[in-house]
View 1 (cartoon, one colour):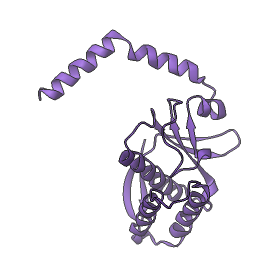
View 2: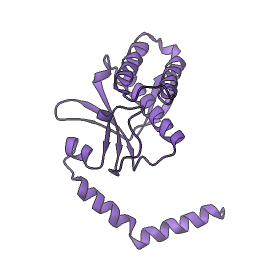
View 3: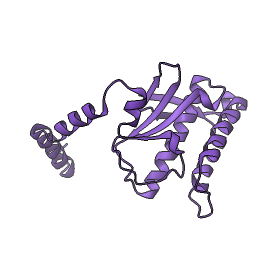
View 4: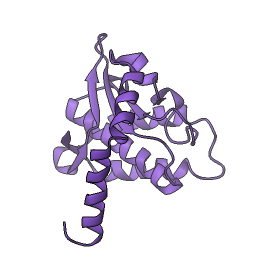
Length: 184
């Protein structure tokens, strides 16, 4: 799903600064208090920004749902976290900017009105929580066990069977050849 979100340039700079600062050698290993303060600052900043100070940015939303307890959860879905360092930082940057845009769009008054999660389908952990706290990162069955009625094992089995399907493999091989040779 794509949604037009609004964030002003100063907010973008605030998020970019946070991502950069978390990668510096003297940055503390524990990011939770800094992340929490960033989310609060985003809400404070957007609360005082005028509509003309905001720029429209289209962001995609991977998953947005409401729990049985009424909590709204925004989830950025990834297969695994084996991205190179630059892409890993960009994923976290986009994740936070999308959360900010959704918070504005939903009219959130508190950073706790929208719970953000980066979800990795593959349970293997490569990177530690340098940008996003561990409580906001889920892997493998965690998201399914916590929020969904579908079992992780069922989805994993289905996707594995799909990825081994000869027809599917031939389709992607053909598409790859067409793209590579400019015949698509």
